[in-house]
Length: 211
Image (cartoon, rainbow, N blue to C red; front, side, top):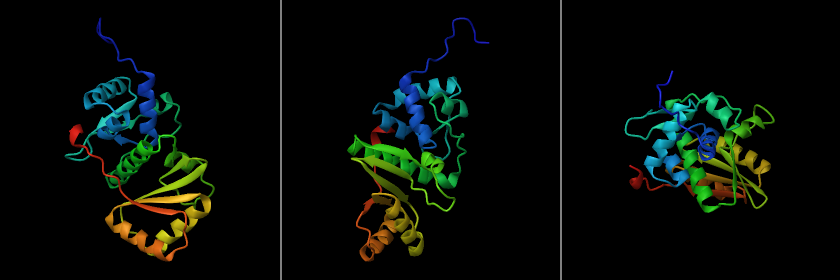
């Protein structure tokens, strides 16, 4: 029982909007939340304190030297009207999850009128178990653009199959790649017939002011 005079943190609509954004991405780093909110780290720390106090999110340091990760609890997901399960972090997937969020931040900072459909929603709309899930889909000017974030080099056959499939299902396919995959996808694009394929380097955000 709380002591007399101790008040519980009050969660705002803005807090729940942030929690929903986090839940759509599975989880996000604290610095990414700072970038999305366009505020200072101290404001984010207060927000995270409120979410933790209400049992809406966990905040955990998963990698040495990296910012903490924010992960909505089931209670938090329901509070912001998301019907997903709580995400269980795996060290092998953290880099990719973070990279997809960076791409989302990058796109939405440049195409403010766009809408992002997250992978978790795409998984629920999946038509067959064999269907390849894009890392996200951007809705812009009536077009549906599949987003692929590639950090590792896959076989040419596999990448070609993914581009073929996504090109059939979407108006355009946009790859954001680390250096190794960037070379591979660029080579395939030269000999391919994908007029709607775009290739970009992974965005790099200046985090110096957030440390």
